Image (tube, rainbow, N blue to C red):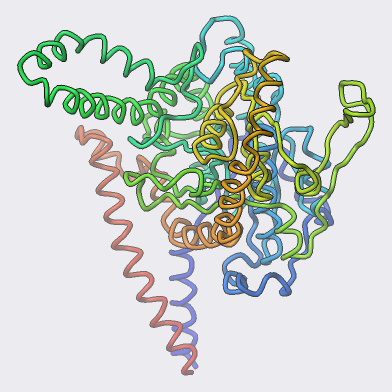
Length: 532
């Protein structure tokens, strides 16, 4: 009996070693935890073992886990994140989605808990429309944007403090997410609706200014600088000159593609570096940290919520990145028993209806698009996904940022004519494009049907759930040490002048060894207790 109690005590000790600690956030933050914990959990989708059979293996991973999904941005960001939330809730998790105020009702209609993100998402989007991307082309609006980002960070911290999550899923626009996860010492998993990792394959969709992306500017500059060399080469080696020029410019373009993401992220970070530093100080985190940089999220487990039919996996992306595919809210609702909201508010949508034109405020794409012969839309990721899934010829009228990226992808797939940028849109151009769409409807329809078949072969929801599940367990077990740059036990090394990166690497290696030993002891203790 004494031996059994000793084994159980050892088992408890090992569990304590492996269990992640969750310290409270800084007292300077809004003290919302007590209020939120007192709320009933009626807004959380009930966990049910009747979820989709093919995902039942993940029930044990998510059952009882508190998941916080933080989705900055607009509908195209929030809807797929909510679909993933519905799936995780169906697998037993208690899910809360933090998003802009305009999506509160939408999230709650799916049976999920909701927390509001501060800031004006529409206003911030309008500013990027004015700039043509995330790279500022003028000083006006910068001060206002900084204040909005600061408000978003405070609300991210408040949402996390209130929900006390076991894991945080967030997108790039949920500013402050990496710092809050570090403070809480919980795993962070990034959700991307556009390619937002450095790669030589494609330029960052948001790295645009004055009507072109950064790679186009770099290519133009390189061609101008190298023009004398190319001319000289053409004189002495005319047969090779064209091939050499094309190879050089391909290398330049690849470098331009890769640098576009760090350039965008580090430029944005320097614009708010003081805000980030102040936020870390408020959370009681060390100011010197890899997480306090523009590339903080490049090493974090990441799931891309777009299809390889549009964006083939870049060969230089690491193993921490998973391309899941598009997520459908109606699919999640059908498979996990939630009631997906179909928001169709007919009436005045900003224009007047007639016998040939019907203006409505909004309608569910998955209901509306199959009833259309062709589509003309702005190129948002959600709208693009819905249009391609139903196999309809498409004309895209992009206005800014990633809309140009998805517009170009649709044209390359052959599902419609070349994009018409919104600033260049006229009645005559629209008429000519629609006439081309009608004239070549058969070709565009065949291409769209082929893409739709590809998308039907994908299961983005299952792939996203699997990605989060496979990463969360190991990441959770290592998160508290991984997020810590300097331990209090390192004072001697700090005084001795040992650089922080070396201390971090030493700590990480020691942590890996300690956890391996602890897991071995855990398995032995469990086996002993079971035998007795």
